[in-house]
Length: 143
Image 1 (cartoon, helix red, strand yellow):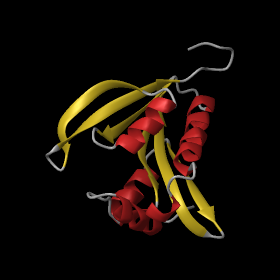
Image 2 (cartoon, helix red, strand yellow):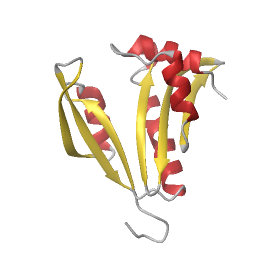
Image 3 (tube, one colour):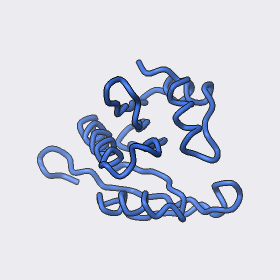
């Protein structure tokens, strides 16, 4: 199991409002939580943390360390998470993203996520959060 301290340290590098070790441990302990770590030569590069409940899945956080970006790691991590959610019976996956995070928005919309909501001034009391959703095709072709 990946340690909460490692994930919290990575989160601190990538986010202005990072989750600390206790928060990360809480997320990891939630029922239905799962994640994937990208690493090369035992060196962490990024991770995704999600949770599933009933027929919905949610990306709690996704990050790629600054020196590892632009190599498709975020897309690969998200693809793994989407596959796990679908295989677990989720009909849709949700996530939140800062409205001004153009790189993340390009990734998510390129993978078929659509905006379904907005939380004004969610990040730091200044930046809106966009709520995105992707419908997952279930085995047998049902939506």
